[in-house]
Length: 234
Image (cartoon, rainbow, N blue to C red; front, side, top):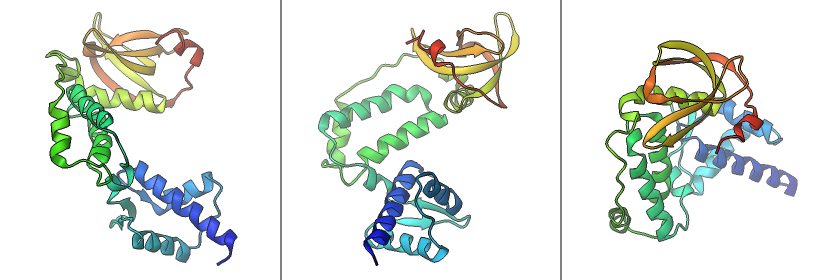
């Protein structure tokens, strides 16, 4: 194997592991090949692709392939976590409790998954007992009336719209009305959650209290965020 060929294989393997650590539900072969294309890595032949997977397994990466042909890194937590300090572990555990008000949403599942990938890693130089004690050293009182308790069914849709720049169709009270908005960000103020968004055909951002939503739906229309408008808010 020439040096050039070895370098290309290293680039493929590095891109593969990076992609699998970022996608906890795994990726299809076509999705992996698309990543190679985006990173301008020469695409492997079918035989080379499977040989890469086998070689990564031999050196400790537990890559599985499901019945629907999704490749998943089973020991993802071990790969991600490495050399975190006591203070960093404590901060992560504190964040887990702070966001407890999001329980039951995809957002909270993602938060827990990210924290578990660190504190549950075998690379973290602490025992499970020590990690649990770190968490007990902090107490988080998040209040009893945080808005997601009553409107958590809307939160994942709002988060999706913000993260993917997808317009939302919202119905809200005071008075009841429906409109199309471009969602920019979610923020917490005085124990209430708000959505900062630009109403369609307007050139300003408005704040909508999520607890006052009656319904939220994704549309199939994307938009481009106006960064100049966004700068007007923290």
